[in-house]
Length: 188
Image 1 (cartoon, rainbow, N blue to C red):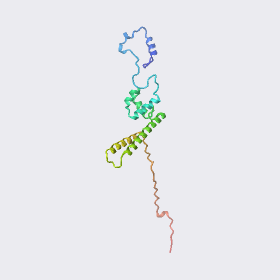
Image 2 (image 1 turned 30 degrees about the vertical axis):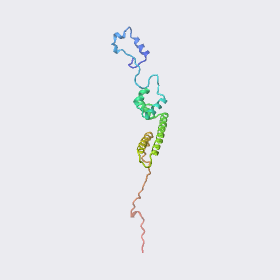
Image 3 (image 1 turned 30 degrees about the horizontal axis):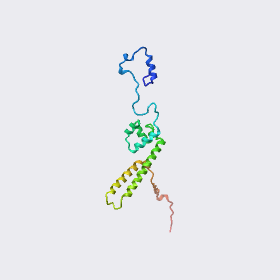
C-alpha cells in the first residue's frame, strides 16, 4: 500500500489484513497511526468554496481598514485569501486575473466611499471662512486634507502612457549644393 492519507474504510481494511496482531503490543503507542481533523485555515472537506457574498464582505471590511489577521480568524480563511479578495481575486492562483463580479462589487464600494469623502471634503472647504481669523479653519483644512487622501486611495491609478501628449515632428530639409541646380549662363 502506498504511503499517504487514506479514508477510514481503507485504513480499517488494511489493518484487518494483518492476522492476529495486537497493534498496541507490536508498536509503541506514540507510533500508532491516527486520523486527525484539519486544523489549519482554508478549505475544508465539506466546504468546497467561500461564497461570493462572504468574499465581498471580507473585501469591503479589509478596504475599510479592518486587520487582515482578525478577518482571517473571524471567517476561517487564510490571510492570503483576505488580500486576494481585496484585490478582486478569488484565490492566490487567480491574483492577476480578478473575478469580474467581485471586482465590480469592489469598484462600486470604492465609488461609494469616494462620493462620501467628496461630500465631506466640499463641506469642509465650504466651512472655512474667508477671513481665517479663528481656529475653525485649521480643523476644517485637516478634515479636507484627510478626505482628499481617502479619495486618492480609493480611486484607481491611471497609468501614464509615454506618448499621451502632443508630439512635434520636425523635418529638416536636405542640404543641397550648387551642383544640384541647373546653371544658366546669362550674357550682357
